Structure formats: C-alpha cells, structure tokens
Length: 458
Image 1 (cartoon, one colour):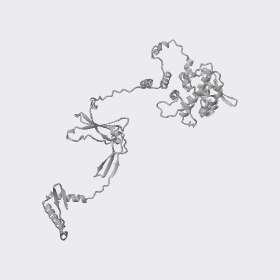
Image 2 (cartoon, rainbow, N blue to C red):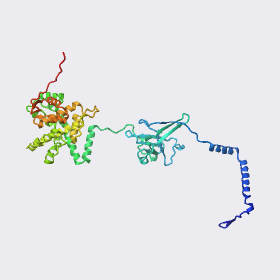
Image 3 (cartoon, rainbow, N blue to C red):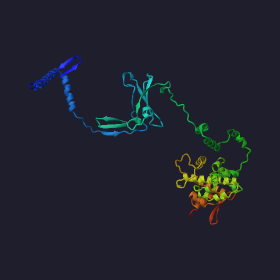
Image 4 (cartoon, one colour):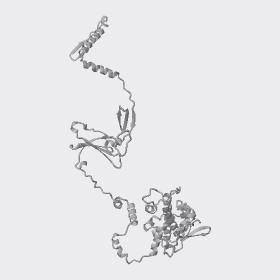
C-alpha cells in the first residue's frame, strides 16, 4: 500500500505468510528491553512518586461520622456575608493589604443589606447590595456555609446573610463619602400637628375635588378659636356674669356620663342641646334616609334598625319639608350610632347588613366613645357603651317629641327593657305604662335620681 503526501511517497510491503507470526514477537521483545533501560535511568525520587501515586489510586474514601448543627439566623446579629468580584479584583493580594469591608443593614427592612469593600487610600470601592442588580432577580435557592471540625466530628451549617451572593461592582468614591459624613443626623421628626399641615398641603395640590372638600369640612369641624382673640381674654372675662346653674349642669354632665344638657331649661327641647349632639358640619352627611324616601315605592329600609323602620310612616306624614329633613337626619344619626356599637362591641356579632358610616362621623365616634391611648383592646369599654346608649336614647326622645316607646330600640341595642329603663332614668326621664307598653317622658327642669345606697344588714 502506498500513501502520497505532496511529493513524498512511502512504500509498505506485506510480509510473507511464513513470517507473519514472528514480527510481533520481535516488537514486544524490543519494547521490554527499552522499558528496562528506561527504568534503569529513573532517579530514586521519581520511583517513590510513582509508587505513591499507585497507593493513592488504591486508597478508598474514608467515611466520617459527624454531628450536624444548624445555626439559625438572629435579628440582632448578621450572618456570614458572601460576595465575589466579577472584575477580577483580589483583596488578598500584596497590593491590597489594607483592604477593609463594611456591612450596612436597613433598620426597618432587615434583609436590605449593602457590602462595601475598599481601602482608604484607593479612590475605588466595591459595592454589592441584596436588593438591586443581580440580587433582585428571582432566586429559589438557599445559601449556607458549612464549617467541619474533624477532631470534634461536628459540622456547623450557618445561613448566609440575606440569602444573597453579593456581586461587588467597582464604583468611584463620592466627595461626601461615608467616612466624611457628620456623626449627628440633621433629620428632624415632625410633630403630629406639622404632619397634618403637610398632609393638607399635599391634598390641596394633588388631591381630587372630593378629597379637598372632605378635608375642608373636617378642618372646619376641628378648627380652634382665633389666637389673636385669646390674647386679652382675661381682661374680657372680668365683667362677665357667671351662670352657676350652667356650671353645676356641666359638672353633673361629666359626673353622670350623659350628653350635653341644660339644668335651667324650661322646655324639653332645651333640656339636651341637639346642636352639640349633631354638629353643624355633620347634617350634610345624614340625608340618606331623606333621599330614600323620595323613591317612594322603591324605598328599602331593611338595613336600618327596627326603631327607624317603624317610624318611616310617621316621617312620611310630616308635611313641612325642613322638619322632614331634620327628623330624617336624626334617624340616620341613630342608625350610625347603633352600627358603630355593633362593630365595636364584643357581644354584638350581628349578621345583618350594616350601614356604611361616613368617615367624618366614624372619626368623631372613635374620639368620643373609643378607648384611651393606653388601652390595647379594640372593644368599647362598658362606660363608653353607656355613654353611646345615652346619646341614642336622647335622639329617640327628640324624634318622638319626648314621649317614646322604647321596646324596639331595646331590641336594636340588644339590651333588656329593664336596662334601657335604667338608662332613661339616668337621663332624668320618667317611665310610665301606656297602651300595654312602656313609655319614657322627659319632664323639665331636669332632676336626676340620687345615688342609691344598699341597706346594711342588722
């Protein structure tokens, strides 16, 4: 056979049949001789290395029994931080002997961390974060570092901080570096009053017309007196006559836990001040019943309390439109008070559809009947529930012209008629039996029952 490669040629002749078995013997013999000559020329160290490699190949992996301990991450401590330099920077090299690192963690969000590596002499520092860049991509892995102690036979597994591998990107230091920042913070905390002013300014700039109108109404309800008029207040009050009866009425109002009242009133309409029970800016949010009445046949009052539903026909019979609007607002205020009591009482878990209380009323109810700042309970206290019930009962007297049948309002309040009777008497009312039903009337001037003392046993 012949192979031609360019201008050169090689000729291979096949051996005769009689010598076919002898050629391989000659070649193997020649190889053995050459291996012996090569072995003679090896140094002693090379022969030892070859023997050591053969032993290594024969040696099997050893089994080690170790106790695995998993160290959980603590909030006050930061676990080990792992990062890498995609730019090829080596912090352990000779030129980076003074390289240090800093770890920063957000006070509120503990998993938001930042790792900064660099030296004070270098203008470049390497920054990696756990919330931006490569770390922000989705990750379904859990990273941990294992430390194996062969002598003790323990393997400690420590979770990596923030479960992220920090990609340390080179960045040029800014002029206002962290080392040059002042130790004291210049951020000032806003007081609640300043915060409310800022909120109103933002609403006026970027809020909708509805939100701006609602903010103005809320401000009008909580607006204080003009500070300029308070400067000479002491001089103005010197010649003012003090009404002692009004002061006594105020003291009894605070002590008896009842709505604002007037002990010197000559008519039932003046005994309790309606304008202090329903404020001036709240009447516009209580016209829902009045507009439902305009629907006539389509009017639905199923979601309102029983006291309100039973008095719809009486409301329809009022011919004066202003009086009809006023009485419908009183019924609406009663409905919102009953709904607020149901939502904030522990025992009232009614499945009936509740009315939506306007925000301006809810904020006022929470301020009047809610618990103090030191209490952690979300339910109303018994004292606040008693005050809320008194507000409802006074409004029932206003609607029924100061003679009311309290059977249905007791059902709405989920209270017995005996307890409701005690509340009416607490307000200065008298209870009488009429047409097989209990009626509460309000005589004037107001006279509250005295404190009952238990008789001592002889």
